Amino acid sequence: MAGRLRLAPGGRYLLDEAAAPFFWLADTPWSGPLLSSEEDWEQYLADRQRKGFTVIHCVTTQWRATPASAEGEVAYEGSGPIRINHRFFDRIERRVRAINDQGMVAACVLLWDYGPPDRTPGELPERYAVELASYIVDRLWELDTVWILAGDGDYTGERARRWQRIGRQVFEGRDGLVAMHSNSMSWPYDAFEHEPWLHVWGYQSGHGDDERTIRWIYSGPPTTRWRELAPHPIINLEPPYEGIRAYQSGRPHTDYNVRRAVWWSLLSLPPAGVGYGAHGLWSWETEPRVPIEHPNSGVAPTWREAMALPGSAQMEHLGSLVRSLPWWELRPAQELLDRQSERPEGHIAVAAALDGGLMLAYTPLGEGISLRHTPATAKWFDPRHGTCLPAEVGLDGAYAPPSREDWVFVAGDESLLPKS
Image 1: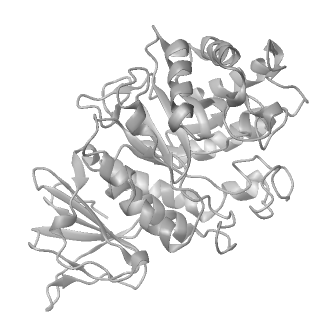
Image 2: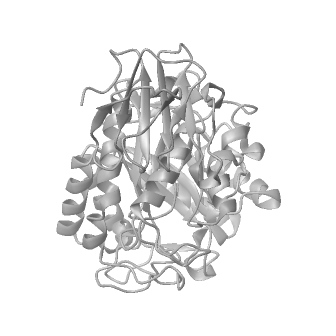
């Protein structure tokens, strides 16, 4: 049981209730608490618990993709004053409690901030946005939660000042952890650096697949600004969802696309965790269809089919490897690499512990790893199946992966390396 989370000393990752480093490995059934039956929700949570997920992302009101709960209830009516529906929150509270019962933490979006005005609580006048968010926090306060104050919004300029004011009013005098979830490929957190109520800086690399998106994941503001700003856990809460259509090509994102974005995100800034999502699960579809208000996302499978997509098992492998290592000591270390891929989509991401005892590198195209210094011991980790093979340096001074697929290179003290 993770229990109540808190910031670690130094501020770059989280601790669980027992003061152990907590790796944020999240699945994203945004609409699950609104639409699921109790039996289906329990089945889903048991699957995610078995696969090692530690956090469940969810929305706590009606929102863009889900106008009402399965019973036709809404969280509130009106835009000023508002009428809060306590019966709606009976359902939400039961679903959040079930997350905790499986030993996972609920990351609850309080005020989704993009979509039609009648189901976008982030667009409420400030006093009513504060009223609604405060009610939800009070209602769920005894549960193990991280509050995502706002979801999918633009938090720059005057919008940043608006959310600063809302955050101060909702969380003044409270000690729970608070995050934000920004819109695709944006970085608003320079403006939030000194907001004491905000602890986790959540961003989304989004669902694009063009070269600009690819480069942004490993060289965009999240990978550079952490060096200049006050330490915070920085987490890609929304890499591409498995199965959703990509913005540019229109092709469904594969498990490979998801793996690549996730591994790049973890090794390109101090790791604190990562999110995962599957098309059909995020919107909790009970029959194949295009999700509401997402016409370009493609026909989604049912949540049950989406739950079984291969990416979630690969997140299990990722979590097992990362949690077996002192991951919280890793920092980006591209300087250790002697030769980089010539292709943007082949970018080799490298991170290492400051004491030199551990290094990880991700090669998305199965290109060799050429280092400035030869490590004592090294292994190849297969991110598709979770197995390990020995790694040996070739005559050209590079470590050649076992196949021309993506691999994770793990090197350092033999006592730290995975055994199989």
